[in-house]
Image (cartoon, rainbow, N blue to C red; front, top):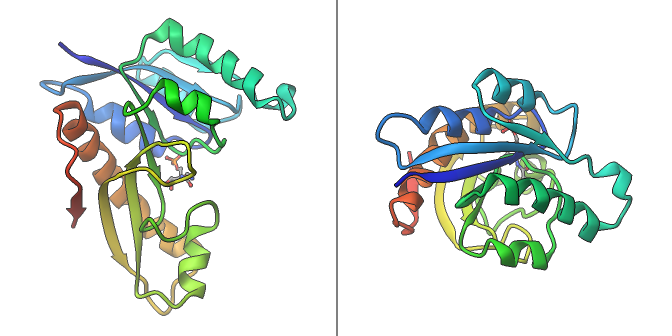
Length: 197
Ligand code: GAR
C-alpha cells in the first residue's frame, strides 16, 4: 500500500520538488497535497506543474491566533488524508497540539547540524562561531522547536571565503539528497539515523 505524503512549504519549494520527484516507481509514497501558508510561495506553481493538489492557508488574517490558523490547516489536511507530513521550508512554528496529532508522522528538514543552531539564521551563526563544518538535518517533529529524533544528517565543510549565502547554496543540494533518502527509509519503517556524504 502506498503512503500519502502531504508537504508543507512557505517558499521556493526546492525540497518539496526533490521529495515529490522521488515519489515515483516503486517508491512507497505519493504526494497527496502541497500546502502553503503563503499564497506567494514559489513552490505552489511548481507543485501544480507536477500535478500535485495544492492549498493555501494564509497565516496573516489569523493574526496571532495560532490555534485558528492550525484549525484551518487541519481542514485541508483532513481532506487530503495524509499518512505522513513533510515540512519542507515551512516557516511557521507549530503548536504542541498540532504536532501531537501527527506524532511520529511528521518530518522536518533544518539547515544546520542539529542540535546546533535551532531556529533561524543557521548559516550565519555557524560561520560566526568559526565552525569547521555545517550541514542539514532531517528529524522527526516534536513539540519543541527543531528538537525531535534525528533521522539523517549531511555535513558540508565551511570555507574561509563562505558567506551565509554561499554556504546555504552549497548545503541545499545535500538537502535535496538527504530528505528523499530519509523519507523513503521512514516509509519503509527505518528510523536509524543516516549520514551523508
Ligand atoms: C531550506 O534550506 C530548508 O532547510 C529551510 O528553508 C529552506 C527552504 O528552501 N528550512 C528551515 O529553515 C526550517 N526552519 P526550499 O523552499 O527551496 O525547500
